[in-house]
Length: 178
Image 1: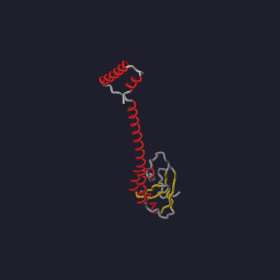
Image 2: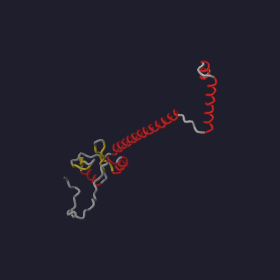
Image 3: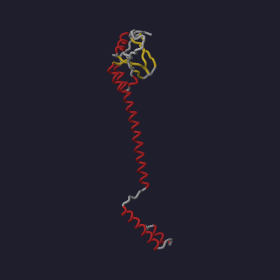
Image 4: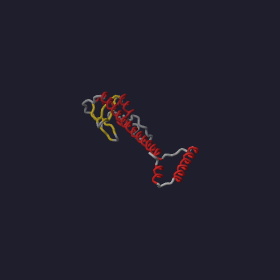
């Protein structure tokens, strides 16, 4: 198959003098490009490379989101397992134990012995799936490492004393029932 230049010569659209001049200029341009050592920028290659880089960045972002979601799901499963294997019975008590959870006052009904353990800090309340379970302090600390929001912090026994408090000399009993 002949080149386009040969076909144009045969058709009589271009004379041989003009064809030689065009080929000579083309060779000159190629020679200059090689000598100048300036890289020839191919726009399609550059655009394709840019598209690949953008796709890789999007893929990395999506993978990071998926990994974060999987990590969150794994932590939730670990917490559920810790609570399920270590929950303590509340007993069928008639004593309401009040506590704050998500800035709301909640109550669970426990026995006298369980209430004493809660007050002493040996048992801690964990809010999981709209239910409250009792777990030992060691397990609650492990759960708090994973998600501190679901662990009910025990009431602070030592509140900072106010010097102007007129009732500072009066002790509030631990068994005060509302």
